[in-house]
Image (cartoon, rainbow, N blue to C red; front, side, top):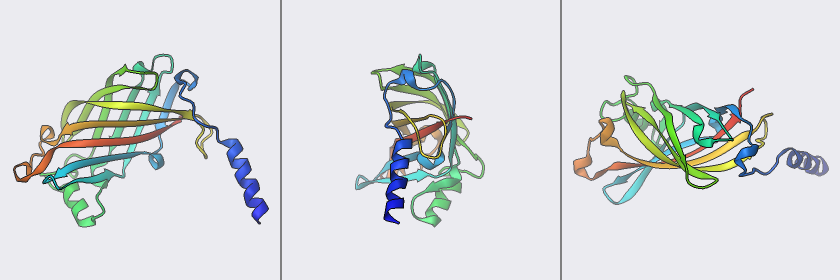
Length: 199
């Protein structure tokens, strides 16, 4: 049994190659977000005592990737506000549906659509796009790192990996509730995303 397991590990390691940061070798074209390997986390100051952190579980999206000119690539991400996850089911429901927060029953989608990008190094840059939240659309700029292209187990095509961070003010999208009581206005975003080459 042990030999079979070791053989399986050898076969698996042979099928998985280390990612490369050389953007030019990544296949051009359409990619689909892998929700099993993606996360959108956000944090907010809680009266200066801590940075309260939560995430969204319902994420989908697409990437049109241009390895020759990565700044010409285009990304479209959709998030289900009802999928907000804090570890407290009752509070999740309040955040998701209450009109003071995400108001997900009325505005059933959070969406980010890129409009431009800049390159700072061979593997980093910024992506600016329109963020629609609670029916309000405003520009947001994210700092993005390209983690490389490679093979993800279970997918026949290429996989591209990215990390991103950004900061927004929740009041810009009509969520200023409790800012006068020490709950922060600034929201820090931390994003991880893998995109699998579309078949």
